[in-house]
Image (tube, rainbow, N blue to C red; front, side, top):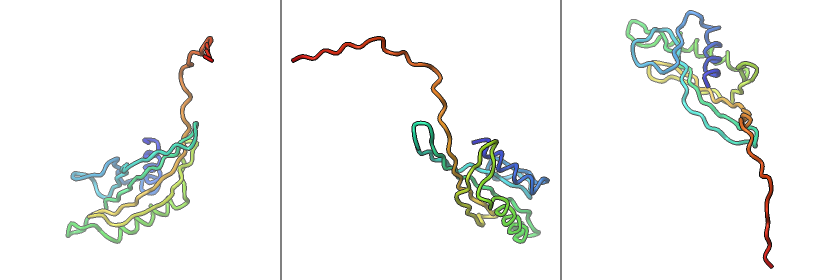
Length: 145
């Protein structure tokens, strides 16, 4: 999970290198403009004995600069929203040697902030069992007739 969050943060940092990126939703005492990358939920579905699918929902929240009235600068808010949406619009991003599929992007204003929700899909392989089970040496079967 952390590798996925780091990859999302890294992509945002390429477009906005001077902005802070927080890994939680901020309540007070944070710098503006900045971003928050927040893990929302994950579901796992078994696909086979070897593989399982993960569906992950992350939010990227843009903490826009405030104007003289202490409200977000809407022009900056929507510009950054469009830029981040476009940054992820190719449908996937890389995490190491894997590709994470972006199933859906949602978003909009939320209080003083604007957010993008990412619905992500990935397939994982199960680790091999670490130990060998002891094999049965013999088996006796008795049939009564």
